[in-house]
Structure formats: C-alpha cells, structure tokens
Image (tube, rainbow, N blue to C red):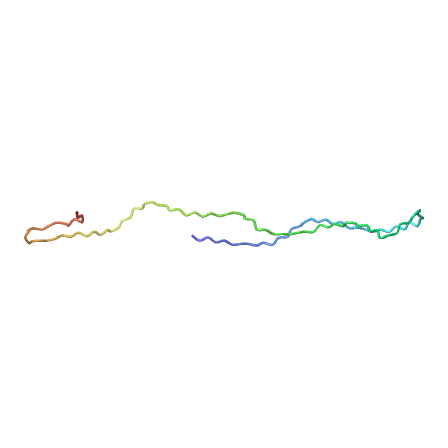
Length: 107
C-alpha cells in the first residue's frame, strides 16, 4: 500500500478592519488679560492610538489518518496435481514373494 502526503499552499487576500486616532491641533487666539500667568515647562501628553494588523500563522493538526493492516483468511477451491511417492520392493530372496507399498511409519 502506498500513501502519499502533500502540502498545498494557497494565497488569499483577507480584508481586516483597522482603526486609528488622529489629532487635530487648533490654536485659538484669546488676547485677554489673566490675573496671574504661569509660565513653566508644563507638558500635556496626549496619547494617540492606532490599530496595527498583526498576521501570524501557526501549524494546527487538522486530522489524522490511521491505516490499519489486518490479515484476512479465506478458502478457495482449486485443482492441483499433487505427487506422492510409493515404493514397491520386489524381493524374491529367502522370504519369497513380492511386497506391497512400504509404509512411512516406523516405530
């Protein structure tokens, strides 16, 4: 039995929604007097976010293919020629007479 395993790669385009924040800076001139002015190194930190598409691949076991081997026995009727040897001894010595097929059993 031959089993062939192959890997197929397909290129696909996938549309992924993404979102980001943008900041518009507007300077508004006020030109009015204030009671007390504070000058200093004050800093305002504004966080700006953006979604970034992260594509990753991982190997996932999709399926297992199990092959089992078993022995199947059955019978078939065939015609065959079987050979069998027989021995006849023709002994005309003292015992006198002819003997038939020799038995294979000894004991």
